[in-house]
Length: 333
Image 1 (cartoon, one colour):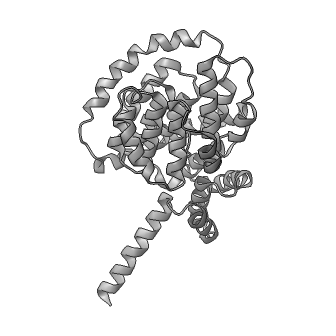
Image 2: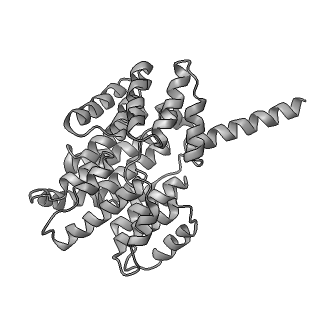
Image 3: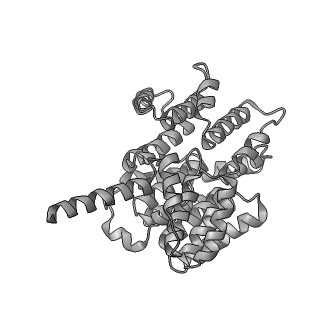
């Protein structure tokens, strides 16, 4: 999730075989957190019995329909807690659309901690690296350090920094479905599908049909590969039949198709996603990879990616490969 839940890139897929090379450092703090999450199950079930006024807005955000989330945010007579969650989701939607400065300008110093955390994410993504120092300072204050949105933003920022153990220090105790889902993403990036699977089971115990549970299930299915890829495809197919088609859903289906060597179908899905957002990083990255598999030129998509998202993982990997090649050539010259 840039500001929410991340899209998928075919080039970053994880497999069970990858785990042989993974960091096998024991994650004892996560194991302890599993018991805490199970104790939260009853409370979540009670909350589920009450009307959820933010379901539509929240669901749009999770599935990447950010403008739809913003457009549906005018909900009257919200309780104070729901109004704050609404404001957090709206500002995170603006971040996902690249409107960092709007968020920075709208959230002032008197805003609640949750909104201040969202502003910090906007600052970080606008290349204000001082945001990390501010984040560390905030966690020195016990009265706000356990705020779930602050912990979610911290986990997101440290995941971008590829400091996964630091990210888990803030997310491992759970407390919300988004934190659980972020844990799944982090463990997959660490090539620890065993821990990701344990986290998914907790989500399934809380709400098996929750959109984030289904998304996390699809991510893990893709990471495990093999016959699981078809199951992931069916999850994204179900989303496409129930909800507005978004870049997140289209990229999910396309990545599944590429795993199943259905590159023509993947290309069609990705071009549809490109029509929705010509600068989306995951769409451009996936199109570049898909084009290579189809024997088509990929330079245009790669150049677009380099211009609009110079810090994207694919751009970094290509730059590193080019540097290694140049050094190898010089060594034998």
